[in-house]
Every structure is written in structure tokens, then in C-alpha cells.
Image (cartoon, rainbow, N blue to C red; front, side, top):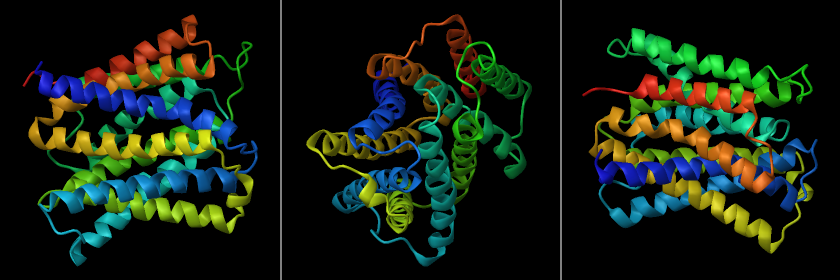
Length: 299
């Protein structure tokens, strides 16, 4: 495959994969209590507001499209914001505090399968094929495996942990369908910037309303973590969008199987989690194989 796709795509998947262990480490650095929902949402809001503003800065510097979206684009941007930023990351930030980094990485990756299922009902030219159906079944088999440790000495399954991570994946998957519907004829980078900015501001206000600002301890390491997460989102979304603009979708999205790989390996490195158990490896292989199968194309 062309290096022009390979290197940027791998960089994006590595950045996205690093998000889960870094967010979990951020909870510790910011001294966010395990039951402090408002502080977690305030943390998320700061990240995505900054990330969105960084993306909008890129739009402003490029000067290829109008900075402010047209009125007819606003409903789509707000819908995308509600599903792919607010819904996804409310459940993501709350669920991640109640599960392991490895489980979070595997469960978050199921967004690919939810996107495929949503596209089947939303787009006449994107129906479920035998290949996609098999890929989804393989991927969800991995979910069953990663959750099967409950009752066998592993961490129990909870709605506010694994359940919320799956709901986050649903939001991301359905958001992909909304994005596909509203981006034709518009600048996807600008849409991403406004989506992240507005969604981040909503999360920030929800966190503030609940007293989340008081549940966070600001330190230099915390600022560095927040800066990394914000840059991560801005860079990965922008590069990925440019790749999708320049190359066939299948040639880019096939690399998404690397996200749970990086997420699991970095969870082991950053959080000292035991990734290399038979059950974890089987689940990871199944989910990655499912993502690869769904996105692989001979054309």
C-alpha cells in the first residue's frame, strides 16, 4: 500500500489508541474522584473545546472555505455534535472510569460495527453484505470473549462501565452515518471543528453546572495531559479527514483495526494492565479481524 496512506493512517490510529490510557491516567493526575461525574465531564469539555478551536484555527489559516457554516448546515452539525461528541463522550468518559483500559479499547472499537449496521438502514448504496455481516459477527464475538471473564475471577461487568462504553461506541457509529450524510459539498474539516467546539462547550457547561471545576486539581502534569489529548483529537481528526478526501474510503478505514491494538498495548505500558492473557488476546484478535473484514476492499 502507498506510504502516503500508510504512515498518516497508522499515526492517527496510534493517537486514537493512546486516548483511553491517557484519559484514565488523567483522572489520577487531576485527582478526579471515582464518583465525580461532573468533574469527568468538565475534563472532557475542556479537551474537546480546545481541540475544536485548534481545528477551526486550521480552517482559518487554510482559507479554502468560509469560516462560519451556512445556515443550512447548522442542523446537521448540531445533530452530529449531539451524537458523536456529546452522547459518545458522556458515556466514554463515565464508562472509562469503571472499566479497564484493555476492555475500554476493545469495546470502543465496536463503533465500526455499529456504523456498518446504521449505514445499512440509512443508505441504499451501503447495505450489509456477506463480508460485512461476517465481520460484524467476528467482532461481536470478541466482545463476548472480553466480557466473559466476569464470574471467573475477572472484573465484573457493570452498566456504568462496559455498558456505557458500548453506548459510547453506538454514538460514534451512528455519528459516522450522520457525518457521511452532511459532509458532501461542505468542508469536513470545518464541520469537525464546529462539531468538537460546540460539543465540547456543552460538556464543559454540564460539568460546570454540576460543580465539576471544583473536583479537579490543576497541576503542570495535568495541563500537559490536557494539551496532549486536545492536540491528539485535533491532529487525528484533521489528518484522517484529509486522507478520506484524497484516497478511497476502504484504503483508509481498513487501518482502523489498529486502534484497539494500540489502545491495549499502551494500556499495558501506561496503566500496567495485564494485556497478555489468553482471553484478552483472543478478544483483541477477533475484534481486529472483524474490523479488517468489514473495511477490507479489493478495489
